[in-house]
Image 1 (cartoon, rainbow, N blue to C red):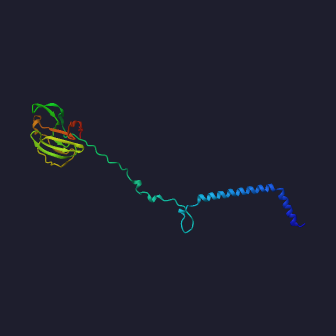
Image 2 (cartoon, rainbow, N blue to C red; image 1 turned 120 degrees about the horizontal axis):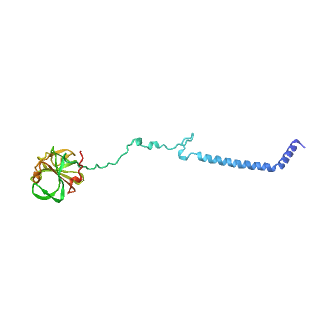
Length: 226
């Protein structure tokens, strides 16, 4: 018997004696190979670029995230907070630096010393040492004039349906219809020109209307110093 035959016989005997273990090793190796292939496939799927991100012409494939910085407003961080416009509240101040000499009485009759009778008093009378009369609020001259009952007078129109009337002024106003006046602007001097209140002495007869109706000026005027 040749040496080759003897070797093959020994190998055959070894395999017969250890067939179970050899089969077990082959099974383990097969399972390990399947697991390795599965892991490699999944890793390749996650890292693979999409078709849209593959650059034509070959070379290394790089996946780039879209740059949103070009779509951002460069001044976005520097924009100031924009506050909505808030309408300025209309405020009326005293039309003089004086005191009230006769209150408003729209619905009740009061004694009129000059006329010697009882009648309503649709405004407030003011007296002041300096006799200066000023606009109670920003407005537009609606009318100026003179009559025996009211004396020299000025009528101002304001926002929100307000109208103010200044009567018993010293002289005809230099203001004309349509002129703009500012709050606190001097518009005349007190006098005794108002016929039906002449015995009160130099004073301002001041009336206010809201939407065409007389109102008590003292319910609207800010009596504090301007």
